[in-house]
Image (cartoon, rainbow, N blue to C red; front, side):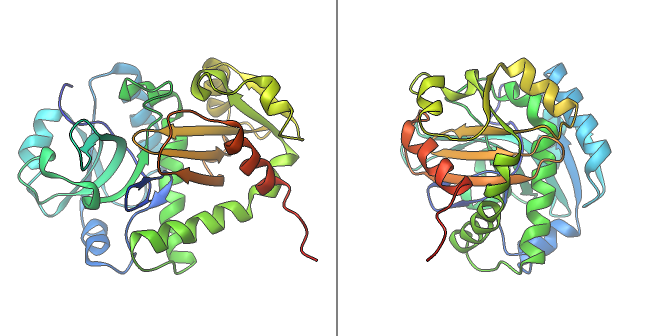
Length: 285
């Protein structure tokens, strides 16, 4: 589908793109509108991506009534305020050529998808566009965990009463996620070679991260997610115009670590050092 569409969920602060985050206050008008809506999941036309999306939504989504539509149907329904949409989307940044690549949750009401801006996303998940997801539908292998984490993040915002603007919400979720980080050392942490980029090596990680880890292929990571494995966690970069870093539990989509940087197209040693510190925090005196 050659439009500025493609799809999922997360949160952000100003120009910082994150994933697995809820983007609005759960007591806001926008959230109330979403909860009263029917959600339309926009299929991409890519067979594998669409099959994974259908399976994940049918198995997991209990938040609102939903059904699946194509891109042409989206164009016809986008103006409806009683509708919400899950769709792949490219959002234009402040400068020409600076684009963000997401799977996003949106309320209906604008004239067309190209009119939606950064602040219109209820939730979104940044894609690893400058890593191994330069074709947006290449994220199909992890769609299940993306949907699970979206649902969990909305629950966390409400359960922990995280309120305020997007910066406060993302900070609150980051605190919750990183409190879980010490349990990462209880399993083997997977680093997918295709997603990491060329600026970090196995030897680099071994010299920084003191716990069990394994370099793996995308095919192995896909199988681990499909198996809902409880033997592993996995490190997931999400590099679009900004750089986000997550660690996921493949068994249920739970995020157990989250960090971000305003800029950067590669995972570097400093990013792994920050992860290692979160997994093995120094004890307070």
